[in-house]
Amino acid sequence: IHPNKATMKVLLLFIAISSSLLCEAVSAFATNHSRRHRQLSLSSIFGSNGAAESASSMMTSSLADEYAIRTQSDRPNELRWDFVPINNFAEEQNNAGVGTLALKALDSCGHHMAQQERDAMIKKHSLQCEWSKSSANVWSINVGRTTKETDDGNDFPRELDCVLSRIMVQYALSKITTTNPDSEEEAQKGDDAILLHVTLPLPEGLGCQQISLSHENYDDCVRHLFTPLNSEYAQLELVDMVNNNGDVLGSLPRPYVHTFNILHRGIGMIVTNKSIFDTNSNDTGGKSSTPDVYVHQRTSTKRVFPSLYDMFVGGVSTSGEDATWTAAREVAEELGLKRALRVLEQGGDNNSLDNPLSNELFQCTICTSYNRCVVSMFAYTCDTSSETIKWQEEEVAWGGWVPYDVVEVAGKLSIDRLKEKGVWPGTGEDNYEDERVTNDESEAKMKDLKSKYNIDEQQERPWESWDFVPDGLLVWVAWLKWVEGNADIL
Image (cartoon, rainbow, N blue to C red):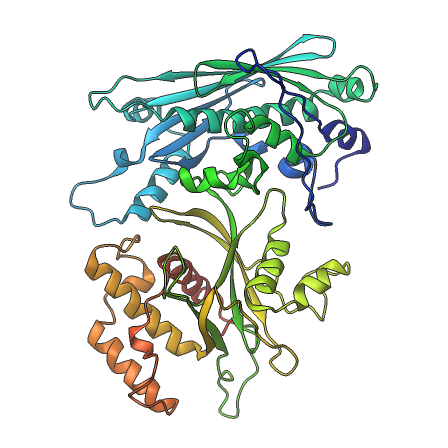
């Protein structure tokens, strides 16, 4: 993204907040961990044409709490979010897991519907954001809410209202500063800064925040917006809420993502000891041997999924962070493999010959009851002759290189156990979860693999008993589908 100089000057933001419901001004918070790759303006976060441009030109959707969010803009200066309970999309006698149901709701709300179909959809709540120019350098942004009364007596979460209304304000800010040439010119006049009067929900009632555009970064803009809700959260790491296309809707403090299970950006990465793109043939005319995959086991003291295994490195992208940088950072932090990060810090990219990190391979959306993420997938080729894997003892109990075909069978057995317990977030119907291979056949295949690799039956960590992190297994299913569609891989 390459915004012009005028846009960059406008979009560097400093916000001074005052509220009719808050008696004292909120002091500025300056983040001290901005990185070279970090993008600091509204245009670079959302694109030079404004936040999630597709959200204004077509129907899109997202997820938060128990709701699918239908986002649309019927007029240039307006954005509406309709909230539809995810359970509305459940079907009788359907074995869809909680993740599959959320994906169905996300997909359904992200497409244009006939009026009759729209009317049949039970909409529980709506947020509407409107913005208009009051005078030469003053804009007003208003976020209103409407809630449909229901028989169950459950009110729409007020805190969720407050959080998501601030995402909508960011959309309006980006539109004001990127689609109004007059605003760009006004913001360059020094003393004639653009003033924004924002009316939006607070924990009790509505509040008015005054925003002044000058020369600070985007992170500070977001932090000031969220300070009236929770001043401690406002100082924590920011991440991006995204729509069904992976476009950024806005940024928010990370704790809210977990509290309301908001759809966000992240990465997944398979680490192998030889390239997955190695298509060299062996003496018999077939492909050379598949690589080993680095698998690790989480410590028993981890708060989430203690002692479970994972065949991927994963992590959440911070606000404005390019997915490639997230991948390089995460593999450096989790496994001590820093070659990719050094290449990027020295000005290289994924195409540099000495970069072990692939380009983005594909995207998939995974949903569970605790995590909803648009995952960008990468591969890292570890040079075991010059690189040493070093993990943090408080994070990882064990790690090692495991043959690819072993990971395939171990993953299948792990999914089957989750299905038997009724906690698999998938459907039981996609390509990797079909019934072509039974449990008995998988166990028999595992015995053959142990014989192939000369593994004692009294193996300390029996492959067949490995329980993998469910999120990782969902990504693994997407990975296998991608591999099947690419004949030159593995």
